[in-house]
Structure formats: C-alpha cells, structure tokens
Image (tube, rainbow, N blue to C red):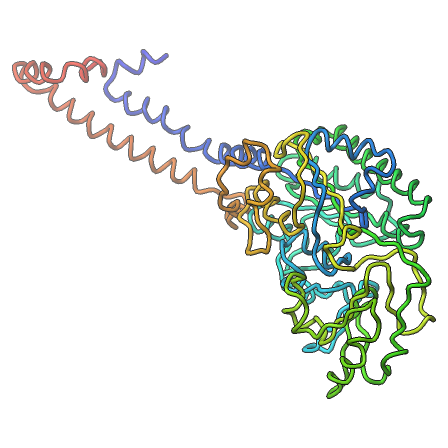
Length: 492
C-alpha cells in the first residue's frame, strides 16, 4: 500500500499527514492509562488499632495470628506512647506524629478557656472541627497529595478536619461489628481503578472495654485476648481473599496498655480541698484542675502533699519528658496518680478494675506493635520505638513528605526492607489539577500542533527538492552528488 504513495510528488505530504495525525489523538487515552497505572502502583497501607491491647497480651495466651505477622514481618517489644495514655490523644498522635501538647487533643475530656467550651468523647462535641484542626491527620495529607483514604471508626476520622473527611469513612457506631468494619475497609481497598484507597485506618474497642471492667489480671481476659487474635485472623483472611495481603502493608498496634486497680487504692480529693475552689476536668488517673479565679495558690498548696500516691504539678512544672505542658487546654494544675491508684472526688463515683492514662514510661501502659508487607523486613524484632515515630514511617512507606512532627524516621527505618531504606523520600503525589479531574487534557492540542509543524517542515523540504529537480541536469547532478542519501530515500 505504501508503494502507491511514492509515485506522485503530491502524495508524499498526504502520506506523512496520515502517519502523523494519529500521534495526536491517542494522547488522551495514554494519559489516563498512565494515571491509572500510577494509581495502581501507589503503595498501600492499613493501620489497625485494638484499643487497650497491652504489649504482653501476645504471649499471655496463644495468639497464632499475631505471631504469624511477627514471623512474616516485624515486632517491636517496647513502644513508648504519648502522654497522657488515653484513647483520643494517642490515636491522634499515631496519625499526626505529634505529642498531645502539639496536636491539641490533650485528653478524652477537655476544656478550652479561650472558647469557654468543653469536649467529651461521650458527647457530640467530638464532631466540632476546631478541637482537631491543630494538626493534620495522615488521611488529609494523603488526599491533598492526590490519593484516597478510608476510615472505619478511628477517633477523629468522622470529623471534617481542615475542611476534609476521609474519602471513605464510617461515622462512629459502637454497635457495628468488627467483621462489618473489616468488610468495608477491604471493599474500599479492592475498588476498581482509581477508586481504590491508598491508606486506611481501622479501630476496634476491645480489649479496652473488658480491661476496664475485668482488670488486666483477671483470668477472664484470656478469652478476650484470644478473641482479638481471631478477629485479626479474620482481617488477614479477608485481605487474602481479596488479593490484598501481599500488596497492602499492614500495621497492627494500640493506643495504650492497661493497669490493674484495687478498691483499696482510692484517693478522695474531698478530703483535701473544697470543691468550691476548683473545677474538675477529665478523669483519673490524670486529672486537670481549674482553680477558681484567684485560688490557684490555695488549691495547689492543698493538693501538693495531700497523698503520697498522687503527684500535683503546676502547669509550668510538668516534667519536660512528658511533652505535656505547652497547650492552653492543659489545666493550671495537673494531678497524676501512681500506677494502680485512682483519683476521685468521693467514693460515689463508679469504680473500675482496670485503667490507663498513667505515666507513658510505665511498662503496663505500653501497646503492642507488629507489622508486615512489602515495605517491611521479615522476622525482625526491634527493642523499642516511640509511637510518634510511626507517622514519618508511614509517610515514607506512602511516598509522602511528612509534615513537621515529633517523630524520627531514622529511629525506625531499620523496620523497613532494604529496598525501602535505600529509597530517597520523594515529594508528595501531585494533586490532579481541576481541568484533569474534569476529564480534559491538553495533550491532543499539543500533539496536533506538533503534527502540523512537522508537516509544514516536510513541505518546505519537499518544495526545495522539487525546485532543484527542475533545474538543468548538470546542476541537478551536482546537487545529487552532495546529497545522495536524501534523494534516494525519498525516491525523487
């Protein structure tokens, strides 16, 4: 077929145009193909928290699924979480890499003096964004970088933080089963094409609830712990059935541990200071005290040496290693009970057999940490890490530039596979520009323009050749000798 276009001089430009024109049109399709491939090739990460799962639970009863992850991945023996060792502060530290004094969610119960508003995990105040906007959780960073995220009941994930919800999320509902939460997360990771999420967080309330009511030393906790391992096995099996297990990096951890309490170890504040002098903020074992105006010194002096099993701090004297001082939501006086002790105003308050919130250096407050996946080493045990180090680690796995944080990637990069360690951190994924999000691309225009330019250049060369061809034979012969290949190739 091409031979017929060699016979006439006018047909050559037509042939070239026919060959060049298709170069413009496919750009639109190839752009989307490249984008889809880019989305599919993005690293994937699922972060799971079993609330109150203490570090030593994995060896207390047979936990084959936890140990399977240890054998296939990494295990950290000692994780120093953030102070105070409560649910909301620590879950926000895990996804921001910040201590509570920096991200602003300083307790499960808070009071903001500037707003004159209170926050409680048991009220709708948890859905007010201003309590959370002091930091940027990882799911927001993922989405601002052009990725997609998912959340199943993680504290704060159903709040519009910095004007954004996770791409897919479940509003908190304690009655929703773990299995249903897993099925939704797996569904979102398995979605076709660009609908699949890149990062997910999954939360389960146990064994925290049982630890509070039974106490961690109760033999009844053995069944609860074994049940958590079975739930982890369910998650692993669902990931395997969906073809995600070898693709998605899986991190399983917790927010804190649990300490055993005793009905004999009670500190009653009414014995030491009048309630008329202060407002009680948050709950044992770390209690915020807001003295009435002009009563700071009096209240502090009444509490400073009130009980040998309780420490009273003025805000500016809270130990620096706790990283719990520089925030307006931290009260002027902080009371901290010693491990195993409970602070109440009087004994009319309900009593628990287990609790957390104590000094984060206590072994009983330490959470579990295991992880596996393409980004992690195999059968590797690390002695210690800080929970705030998890955020820069996750950002590195997701190829995102971490926002300023209190963690350190260098302190935990030994958890990563050699291939991941050798990679240099890269800038975050570029967000899809609005015009691309609407399905339009400039590639066809650019391709057509280049095609026209090439055709015009060819026509100029062709005209020159025809002009030389019509000259006297001697001149033509002389020109042919100087340009033999060009003339032969064009069959002029």
